[in-house]
Length: 143
Image (tube, rainbow, N blue to C red; front, side, top):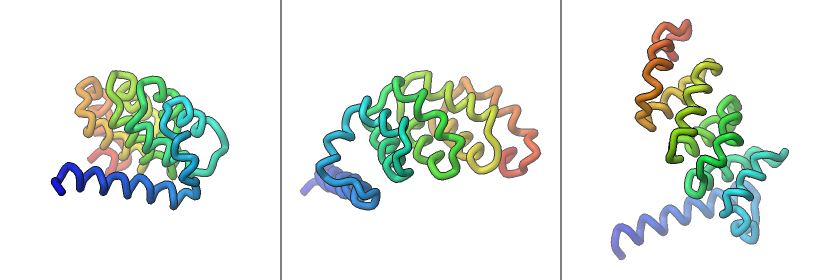
């Protein structure tokens, strides 16, 4: 077995274990492959685990179309990291725009996470926003 096959199997096992933890049945897996269905999960009062998995799947199957529904989750302490995973992976400028906007509104740990995601994206357009955070009252944010 080559490394590519091993990696695919490993990723598949991680993916399937996520469904088991969330309580979703394997029959529901097929419903979670279209971006439209995944966005719908974020728009309802589904359990946090379902929304986390939807974000994880949007990192793979999403487009700029999902940014408007993922971006508000950046402020949610429990879903922020999942939303950031999605926005880090999405191509195009809208994800960077959403992270920059969040960096001007959020505080504390969720802001630190957003700053890290901006770094992951290597978003040059965020230079001014990041420079302003250097004087933030929260030492962890400033550093």
